[in-house]
Image (cartoon, rainbow, N blue to C red; front, side, top):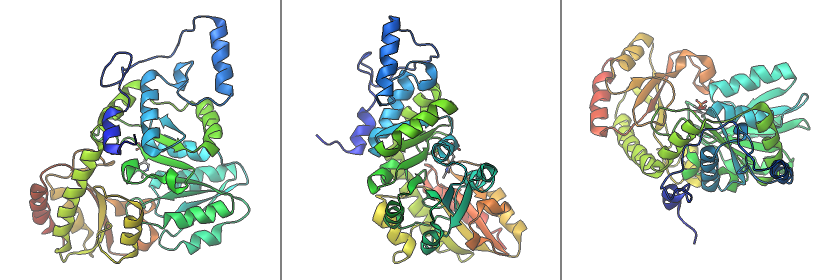
Length: 391
Ligand SMILES: *Cc1c(COP(=O)(O)O)cnc(C)c1O
């Protein structure tokens, strides 16, 4: 019987041994073997390509982390999933597993700021060159492909400015030239889109965000297809990427309600956007809400829903009034991250590595919101009052 994701989220990772609804938290470094032969046999089995649900030492995982990685793999329809201690660890693992001196990468120009830094800065020190492509014009991606291109790293939608791309067109270009593809899917989560089924080789989620949903834990997941599994497994083990069993448990606990929370974030966000649409001070709302636009079309084509993260663009010569607007919001916390139950706001234009070039203009201000699970009526009243500060 093919179960829906909603059912899977409730039934996966139940513990058959303890007959509990959830797996136990198993903390380990050492794992005992009955005999030396048993240890040797296990190692042989791993060499033959057995999956990661096999462990012989704490660095390879514990029952709890394995329960979570199998859970995510099932949701992603992946061959296997690797866990890292942060979402960014999963970004780094995807790149470090494949890119070598002389190789080139092509990365979405609107990418998450630390991803821009690792690719444009750190990798250059290893003689790995990165090109950035315009997510609104995939011809710029096509033009940058050459014999050295090892990987196309996509972030969809782009962090902070939310451009939605034609993902299948990217996959097609990559496959024709035998180029690896990775996608940072933190915004959509595998509940709304399954990148591996579209043909991506690797799919990244920061578990810190919607997976956990409670702003109290950090974790990352890298889900892979069969083609890249062995290479990622090799690097994962040697680099020592690992998630703690306690953190894995918290994320697993959040996963049970992923579907319900995302639906509610979407519902609340639509109400907020409807209100913001009527506010003349806002030049643009960066969220797939306008039918007929390219963004909307690409969102609709690939996603079964939307989440609670978006930005607005305000044009003003008075930056101070923008900051006053943000500071005077009572129900929106000023803080990094997102995906938890609480509403957040952040002035993104304070740092150019955070902003896609299109919006790097004098008097342009990008403000990012995460709409939480509060009563949207209260959030709207808060926004209405604070927006009066904008001059
Ligand atoms: C937060 C985030 C990450 C990194 O996740 P951490 O768990 O904070 O390390 C990567 N990509 C995107 C799009 C994110 O929003």
